[in-house]
Image 1 (cartoon, rainbow, N blue to C red):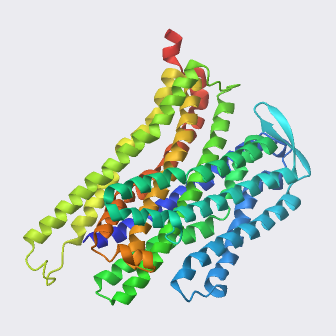
Image 2 (cartoon, rainbow, N blue to C red; image 1 turned 90 degrees about the horizontal axis):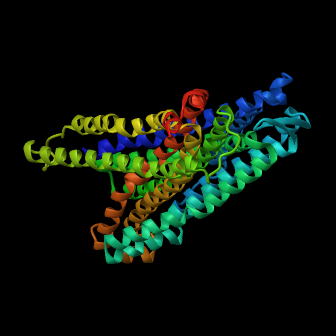
Image 3 (cartoon, helix red, strand yellow; image 1 turned 135 degrees about the vertical axis):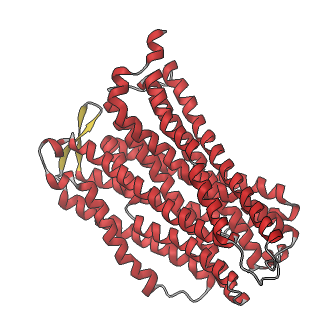
Length: 493
């Protein structure tokens, strides 16, 4: 029953959810770039080809990734389990290299050598090669984030093996090691995002940041393909288990699933990094529309917004994690009820009631999302109307800075715990065999870590992208209203 619900959940969460998240980032970064371009020399002089440069980047990315698909299907023939991850990684590297060449071509052919970009009230002179660098730095920052994510979540490397080894002394040390791994995995991706923001903003202001986000997402077709690989492999394993297939088939699907966990984590890394860049571009558009000249953190109005905004991802994560816990509790109770009340279920002579388990998950996913959704939607409205645009700019900056860190650490911690469990179960190395087999005390500790990690990597981590993007979009839409009518409380003081 739980396997059926798990299969449905993988499709909904890792396929539909992650796909819609990345699509949202794609659309928002395109819109942010087009808005800035419309008030730059491209829009003022009605230059069509340079104006649609962001869409050209996206188009070249789709074509390049379709061609690169041939490498995975025809050129890299996989003959052993340990060749799965390298083949997927090569596909990502080749996509990035081909995409860099494609961006260079469209920048050379589609852009004038010199043009101006709107930069907070003034027109900044930019060259076509500078815009190429903005897209390229986002593209390669995405690859770096992907590689770092792979290093911290793949059981082929020491971080996950250390987490698995910590299971010797029980679940507590496993949880401690897993959390430490997640926090440590934030360091390099944040430096990559910070460097891409600094370079792209220095070269082409907020337009540069927006096209850097597009660059990071330009290999989205490859990213989504290797992201979908995980849940497909997991579902195949679930079907093999339910069908009572041989142990060898289950071993193969487990190996595919372990590689899939890593590729899913890489996809989430791309989503989080691009969400940070997109949110910053939207934040810049909000500041421009609200006619804010500077955002000074030493101003009390801004600082209180900053500290409250930094708290929001924690509040949001608490809601989503508790929702998963309560839904899981109902699911376990339902499974126990069916075992106790349906004759022949324990012996395997009767089929269980799958529909009820799926209904519990579906109902919970809809009902439990109302409070977090209300938090995201109402916060900009309440802050903008009561405290004004300066405080709201602080809230957006705080939520962005805090949300990115939590999202990366939560996603990587959950992926590492999952693969630490798979590492023990597979028993592929001498070290893994000393921790196994299934049912041993280290394996039980690893299962506990995996259970804790699921809401982190599949719910709280990825959903924080929505928090930081949606708040920025809503603030941008209502910016003129907040600038004119907002700040009611401060007017009375």
